[in-house]
Amino acid sequence: MEKNIAFSQRETYVPGQFTEFLWWLSTAEKEILVDSVVDRNRYKIIGMTVLATWAFATFTWTYFFSTIVDSVILAIALGLFMGFIILTIDRALIKGITKFNKRKLAPLLFRGLLALTIGTFMAQPAVLYMFDKEIKLQTSLDNEKKKMLKQQELTVLYKTPKDVLTKEKAALKAELDTKYTAVNKARENFIAETDGSGGSGKVGIKDIAIAKRNEYQKLDAEYQALLKETQPKLDSADAALKEIDNKIKAEETNFTAYLNNGFLTRVEALTNLLKNNAALQFRYYLIVFILMLVELMPVIAKTILPSGSYDEKVMLREEMEIDIAHSNIRKEQQLKEIYNQLAFENDAEAIKAFFTLTREDRNEKMKTFSQRWKEENHQTFDGLWEKMKKEILTKQEN
Image (cartoon, rainbow, N blue to C red; front, side, top):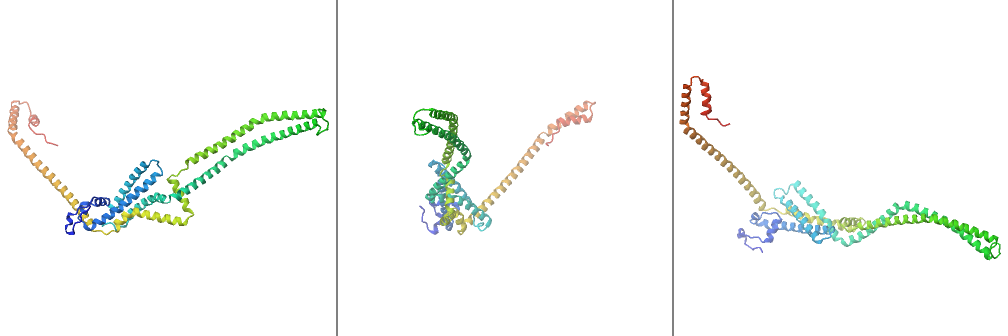
């Protein structure tokens, strides 16, 4: 709970936790904003718009992932993750809008287009949720239509081999039927001849009856031979036709298994639903526009709300921190220069003291070299000088 403190005592104002949370969402600096009386509520409003878009983004993304994953927990986790990303983007968008650049068209246009793009995408799952019943019906109709089209496609694809096999089978059956008809005719003639109901009209097996029996037996033998030759061909044709039918059924089953109620399928159903329905089209675009405004709310609120002393204080605070940083750098540079100067002076004094302390030893050593040189008359002065350089003179630093 926030404390109700008089205007004259605003320097002791202590915001509540929810207010601090809204300020954080609005990217405001608490230490500066707490002393900006007028701007406190403005940034609470901006924070509430960010909170609304965050909740909306989390819901839409959760619904989106629920259409493509089976686990509810995973869909919620992914929705929260994507909601956090949208929250981060929204905070970055409004952080860059200040009193001093909100009237500049280019950065404002860029932020608006980015927010509009995000809003357009997030509006799609929300619309799918709103038209859920209609979309389910349209999806069912679309899937049935796809099945019919697939059946027609398979029928056309296998029509030629099926026609060839069917014609071959029909020709074989026609040949068998013709031969079978001839056999039946010969059998009937033979029976009519033997019972006297036809032919010569004489009962019993006479010469004519014997001839007709022989004709019948001959035709029947030819039929049996033809049947024995043709039946494997008929069986082969039936097997080939059955195999084609099985392939068609298998492809139809596989195609049906791929038909689903996923996100893209629902989007396609929504598109088909809108094609011939002007009233639904109007409501659809109106809803999309409203949902896009939800994502634009933080940018709009930060742009249209008047600016108070907060932005001025932030600018002054930044300038002060920059001045302090420059001052600290200058002081550090000065300290380094002083350190280097003092180090140089101390080193110079140490070197002078070194040469002062070793002066007498050097002189003694030169006297010793000079005495040796006098005693050794065969040495030249140049030789003496070379020895003294090695033993007495100090080698200079490079």
